Image (cartoon, rainbow, N blue to C red; front, side, top):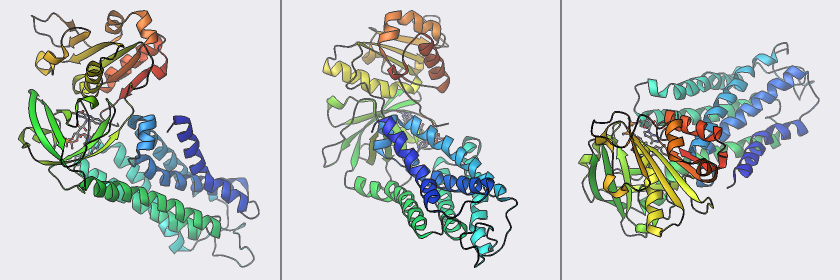
Length: 434
Ligand SMILES: Cc1cc2nc3c(=O)[nH]c(=O)nc-3n(C[C@H](O)[C@H](O)[C@H](O)COP(=O)(O)OP(=O)(O)OC[C@H]3O[C@@H](n4cnc5c(N)ncnc54)[C@H](O)[C@@H]3O)c2cc1C
């Protein structure tokens, strides 16, 4: 789906409860009280939309990219949190009390019924905890899967608490139309969790894969290949990624995202270039051929298919080569007439993978700690290197595809923008969302 359509759809979904509340809500109250209700309503609808943003919906992430989807998810979580934190304070000055028969629309009072407030208070405490836990995830010594479980269960609990609070304590939420809308929106949010954790694994179960080969590329990088077991395989574009689960049941949460480094045109076997990092990636070398695997995907929009630029610049840092290798392999396989240059940066010579296959033509190897005998580029992938490799014409006309450490991508992107490369010609993928 196109980004503009997605933005409009998001805005409509998030503001629908607010607009509907406004149109059916009773007599107006002082501005600060209406603002309090409005912020509470917006915070709740944003929390519910977070489920859809974090769910693996190809129509979203393949349209704008997983990076953008996750970054948006994070920013909107913080925004919803700040709205939610302000919400109760803005009611200051409103007389408290139970529902008065003479004030059925709560124009003059707010509820003090503790059972209705308690769910709001619980959500009020849980929401900042959930957001802070997500922000500080890497500092905490949790396993990624444990964090993910806590995040999912916590978010579900908050959504249910907020539904109760909105419907029973809310001035607008208690109106039948609004109650129906909130129940439906919560249903969509819960449904997106069920989709990711139950429906997708259920469908994947019928499409198993088997590990074909495990090859050591460098001291800490491996190539893992899988082939379809009894089905036709995966329909993907070069540069996309999947969530890979190896040796677990299809419902397991032990799955990790990896870019596909093989070319779609090369057959149904799929390969991944994997760097040792943590629990799963450090065990790649022990995986036996024939082990069952499940693939959920393809996801991502790091693709040059259908683009009309005369040349393709691939800029990889370390294992970031994986997704770009898929693109390069497909271009070579299909005899793509577009010009291509690859910059491939590493720290030391031992980290260079696929050197023989990549060859020397149009490939610029960069080492930050080169040996004395090194004849290639040295230092980091930076502005000066970019200007050495690409002419002014190439910088303004080619499409630039990059993947690597955040710092490298920031430097390259800033330089490209400074040199006049339009942002729609810069494609990037990050291997972590922080
Ligand atoms: C879109 C994308 C494509 C990627 N492609 C590649 C690739 O081609 N080759 C490669 O070597 N690495 C790739 N990565 C990184 C890779 O997913 C992590 O290195 C791997 O998941 C680490 O798992 P672990 O169990 O070994 O380490 P852990 O210690 O469990 O995790 C280390 C870090 O990896 C990330 N991570 C772990 N599990 C997940 C998960 N299920 N979902 C999202 N992030 C997770 C988290 O940031 C975590 O803090 C990619 C990441 C993303 C987001």
